[in-house]
Image 1 (cartoon, helix red, strand yellow):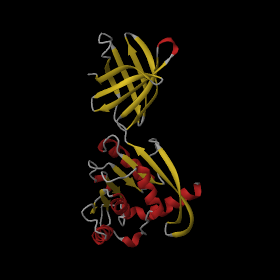
Image 2 (tube, one colour):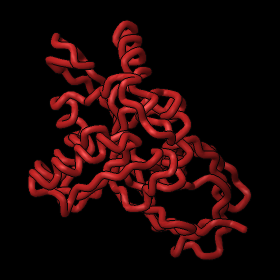
Image 3 (cartoon, rainbow, N blue to C red):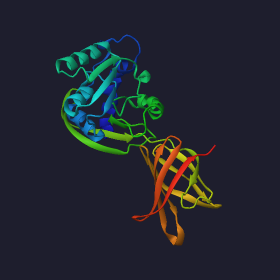
Image 4 (tube, rainbow, N blue to C red):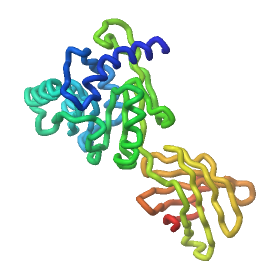
Amino acid sequence: MILLQRLACAALTLWAPFAFSAETVDRSGGPFVPTPPAVVEAMLKLAGVGPKDFVVDLGSGDGRIVLAAARLHKASGVGVEIDQELVDQANGAARKQGLAERARFVRQDVREADLSRATVLTLYLLPGMMHNLRTKLLSELRPGARVVSHDFTFDQWKPDRSIKVETQEKYEITGLWVSDVHLWIVPASVQGAWRVRFPDAPADEVRLDLKQSFQHFSGSFVRNGRMLRVRDGRITGGRLVFSVPGETGRTDRYSASVSGERMTGEVRDGETVIARWNATRAP
């Protein structure tokens, strides 16, 4: 695996000048490194791409990921690429394949790309650029958006799921290769203090204080002066779950849908719903 990562870094370092530079691209400075077809298919499958999705591919090269999403999954999308020749090639392929209404390509620095429409975002970028883009992705993508990367990760933001894909070529070299494909689901932001209400116990004073680290969180749950530790906190898109100790030694499992400044959910003891709850952000 270390050898594969070194080969990947070496190959993509050659690619970097025209994947990330905002200057006029000189393609003689290094080869274009395409994602193998088997990996493209695996990325789209792992993200669950479908007709309702809008796919944004950062560093789209010859456009193969967005074109495959449109051709195979009836999705729409845009590829962002700094090399004008590759942009023209990809748009030409979209017209030739009858996909131009659903797949288009623009010349732009990936750091300036508009991510507001993306339900799926794909990348095959060097670790340094992945790190630089992390804050942008978390702030601009909507909760529940899926991010899929070929080989490289976001450092502290760990993938929700990873798979290995065998391919017969990579870096334009024939042979038996293994690629890593990683999936993240963008989490809602729940960091901070929340006022909790139980409709069946409106007089109770409840406060939830959360400390978030990407898709995980910890914190405290204070009800009528009794503080309990939040356990196993996790956010998947706009869905939150955590546990707190309940009465008589049981463990209560909380779940909720998060929408901006509000949460709405239920409490379960095993499979039994024992309460409903909602919360708003505290001032």
